[in-house]
Image (cartoon, rainbow, N blue to C red):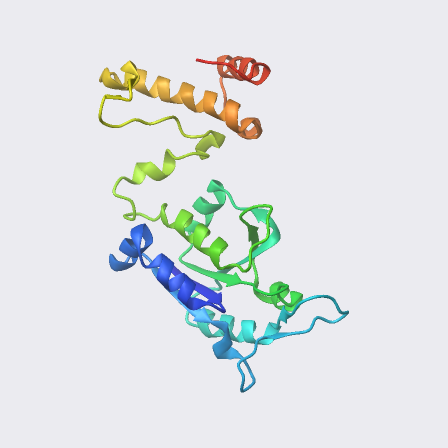
Length: 248
């Protein structure tokens, strides 16, 4: 996958995504990430890319032309028109399903806004997806872009040692992931659930499914409306929602 990030702070992208999982993916040639400095496409000697908004108001606005020129420079090298993701509070909320959807693209461009935002005309001209990572405001789009790139990269073949991991994480099937345990078997007088030591994979799967349902009902009941639950699981969820101290 080829990812271009249009930003005013390329060092943020380069320094963060060059390590850990994304860094290994880059080294293996599975992922290519380039941070493109929008200032390089400014049309004045000071390389400024912002100006006052028409109509007045606080703050400055990123101008359309430098952004468009940066986009044109990278997109013309791509065989087909790429998906362009603009990170903004009014966008659709990023999700696991969106990560899977975008992971199937060959080329992606992320547009990171700053100041009071971006001239709406360039958004209308080049952007295909407006996405938010939550109901709060950040200084710029770089952190949301990196969050999304990390999540998307997990679904690229060969990036994870165990490719099934990405599809058993939280939010798959609108359920949170089940609790997990590692060695030692007993820690601070707390024991690993016996079923996980049984070697009975069918029973382990049943236990994990049940715990995913319970955890979702207790901590994120809003997800249940999209979950594919059995009749028994629906009844269990009702009991949990009616009893804050439910234990199973």
